[in-house]
Every structure is written in C-alpha cells, then in structure tokens.
Image 1 (tube, helix red, strand yellow):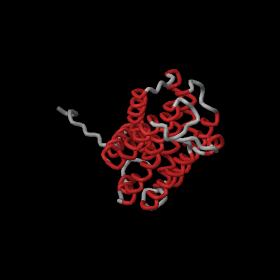
Image 2: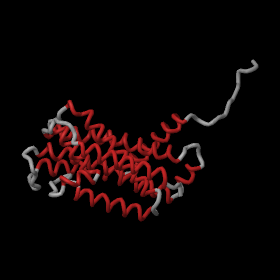
Image 3: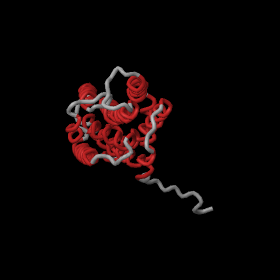
Image 4: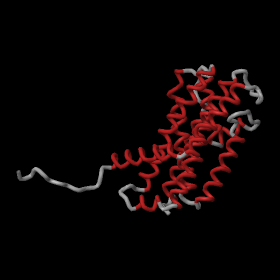
Length: 251
C-alpha cells in the first residue's frame, strides 16, 4: 500500500484563488441590502420614472431609447464605483483587507477579484434593466450588443479601479463621502436622465457621459460608438488601473 496516501501541501493555483475570491465578492455584494437598493432599486425607479412620464424634457421623441442606456450607465457607475468604494473602504477599516494581505492573494489579485465580482453583478443588472426596458417598449439594435458590452467592460474597469483607489487610500468615512459626492456630480454632469448643455464636451472628459453616449449611439441608434467614448473610457481605465495598483493599501 506504499504510495497510496501522498499528501503534497502547496499553495493553490492562481486561477483557483481568483475564482474563489471573485465568487466571494459576488456573494458579499448581493448580501448587503443597502447595496441592492443603490444598485438595483434606484436605477429601476429612474427607468420607470423617466421612461414612462414626460416630466423631464428630452432631446428626442424616443424616450426609452434615451433613458434606458442612461440608466444602464448609472447602474454600472453605482456598482463599479460607488458600491465598490464604500464596501471596500469599510472592509479596510474593519481589518478584513489586512487579513487578506497575509493570504496567498496578492494586491493586484484582490483588485482583479473585486472587479470581476462587480462585473458579475453588473451582468445581472443589465439583464434586469434591459428586460424592464423591453417590456416597456424599448427596441435596441441587436447587432450592436457586442460593441455595447465592450463599452460596459471598459467602463467597469475604469469605475472599479477608481473606486478601489479611493477605498485604498482614504479612511472609510471619507471614502463614503467622496464616493457619494463623485456619484452626485457625475449624475448631474453626465446627462444620464436629462440632457446637459455641455454634454458634447463632457463626453471627452468624464467617464459616465462617455459610456451613456456610446450606449445610446449603439443600442438605440444602431451605429458605431463615437471615438470619444472609446478613447475616454480607455484613458480612464488605464489611469485608474495604474493608480490603484500603485497606491492601494491593505490597511
């Protein structure tokens, strides 16, 4: 019977570590009631309110074609930036990240797992919001779905990296305040639910209008996304990832 039992303790593989941590991040997000309100109920209420009423004047007769992509952009920002920053900030304050720092999970591995976790939740949001939009009469162009998903992936990387950057450098209370403030500023300046006069140039500068204008052009307009949307999101994502990897701290 020699050789039947041969334990070989070793560190788990990188892919397995990232997969398990990503699954844990998804469960933590879905477990928090306040996060579900921010990530699901607020965008859904905005979709129903702006899509079914004419209280807000829009620059187009296709209300749902304008509102649904904007609400999808709002949901991506809520989950990948605001929710990510606040949740990670409190995990850092409570010492959770400090303990993870002593595990085989590397710093960049944590950033990847957290971004993968919010990406999975965003996938659920997209199904819910797009399904609600379809029930209300929204008719997107299916041929542009791949382009729209590419924009969402870039935006998720950008928002998540900056959310993690804030959470990894500021105290938890300051993180919550800063994330909420940025959320409100982008909500007002991003042309999500109503047109903004400066939206033409903010698309080159801010990530949220870059995403929403790109989604409107592809899903509702049926054309290619503006080059400004791709470049804007790519620059924000590259800058956010580089900054988060450089300055994110466990404690």
